[in-house]
Image 1 (cartoon, rainbow, N blue to C red):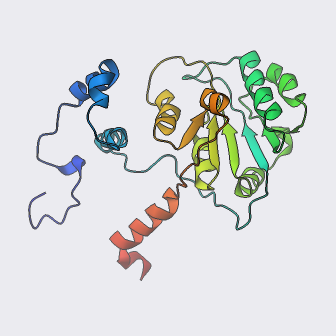
Image 2 (cartoon, rainbow, N blue to C red; image 1 turned 90 degrees about the vertical axis):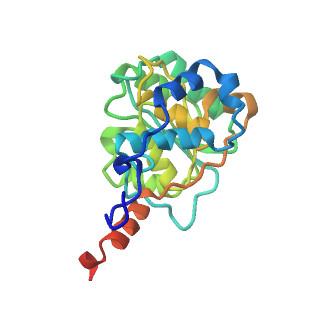
Length: 239
C-alpha cells in the first residue's frame, strides 16, 4: 500500500513481486539438503505462514471457543477417534494397535476414549475392549461433554483426519499426540497434521513410541487473538 491508503500491510494487497513460490516448494520437497542449509531456524514456519497469507488465511488453525480449566486433572488423558474421509483412509487393526500400545505403555495415566459418528461401527469393539481404557460412546455424550472433558486434561491423542479436534486440544493447552493413519494423497488437509508435527505443536505416534516423550505443545488461543484484533481495528463497534 502507498502512504495515505489506510490499508494493512500484507501479501494480499502488496504491489511488490513475491519470490517464486513454486520454485521454493520444489526446493523444499525435492532438495531437503539445500533447504536445510538455509540456517533459518523458523524457516519452515515462515514458509507455512507465507502460504496461508497467499491463500487469504491469517489464522492459526480452526477457530473454536474451547478454553482450559483453571485446574487440570492429574494423569488424565483423552483419545479422540475420527474416521475415513476424502483425505484419510482407515485401518482398524493398525489404529487399535496404536491405541493399545499407548495405553499399555502409559500405566500411570488413565485414558478416556471417544469415537465419532464417522468411526466405522465395526471398529468399535476392538477399541472399547482395550484394557485400562474408559470408553465413552458418542451416542451417549452431549455437546458439552467434549469441551468440558478437554478443559481438564493435559494430554490428548487424535487421529489426523480430525482437524478441528487437533486445534481444540491445542486451544485448551493440552499436549497433542497424533496417531498414524493411511493417506489418500498429499493435499492441504493431509499436510495439517504433518505441519503441526514439524513445527513442534504435536507429536507423531511413531516419534512418541521411539522416544517415550510427548512434546510440550504451545497453546493456541486464536479466537481470543482474533477478538482482540477486531476490537483494535473497529473500536467504534464496541463504544
